[in-house]
Image 1 (spheres, each protein chain N blue to C red):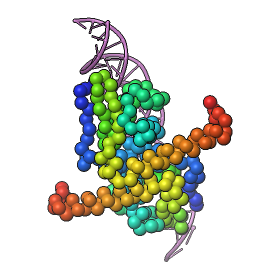
Image 2 (cartoon, helix red, strand yellow; image 1 turned 180 degrees about the horizontal axis):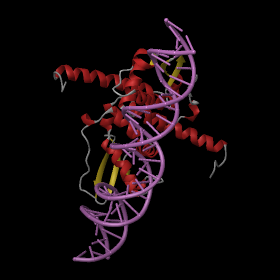
Image 3 (tube, rainbow over the protein chains, first blue to last red; image 1 turned 60 degrees about the vertical axis):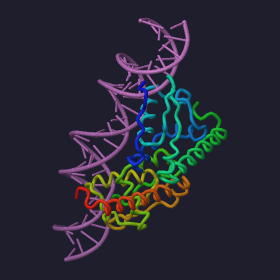
Image 4 (cartoon, helix red, strand yellow; image 1 turned 45 degrees about the vertical axis):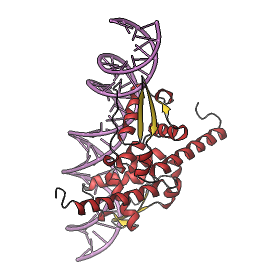
Length: 118
Length: 118
DNA sequence: ATCGATGTTCGTCGATTATCGACGATAAGT
DNA sequence: ACTTATCGTCGATAATCGACGAACATCGAT
């Protein structure tokens, strides 16, 4: 693991890139966890994909300017970049709100229709 | 040209799909024009790509549930789906706001630094 | 110095995406 | 009926993306 990870200058980010980074279910879940629980250890995300794939998604979010990755020993702690939330006012915020609403709706749906294909 | 174009039920849309559809510069421009000027004839978008490519992007937006396409004779009029704005509250709205802000900033930049490679 | 844990990078594979050119379908005007 | 205008669709191609496994780098502990 390199001793530092690259974090782009926010001036180099574009709206299209941010939205593209957010346009994936796995990355939306990462963002949702971060919004809900704040800084989070890298190994504690329960995504259904392999380690290198997680790295790929983490890099995508980081290079879009959305997350900050702090290395501490062999571990990595991820958090939302607060300055990114201000870069495109309300965009990330409204997405987070929509994610939470969607997840709540999903749970309600599962409670109604017991065990959908599981 | 088919006499009707397919518009998905909004219940079949996902947040990831919407964001993915918005995560492209060409499509963002389309959305910005629609937000600014309302229903717009298909042939009046000045995107720098070929006709079939425009079709592709239009289809992407339509299938994401973001736009409504009304056929009238040989022409096609595109507009934002108002119900989509309510599907994920504030998401599309904040994106539109960010697009306008970004375009305004671009113009200001060009005025400051005269003729950037043009 | 060696080992194990953690996480990134690289190479690869299949699927998707963006682009174009060519063709087909529909409608309006002559 | 013929012509033109407007689009959508199909086929092809190059690029990109998501996923995985293998290899590498760093840290902490033995």
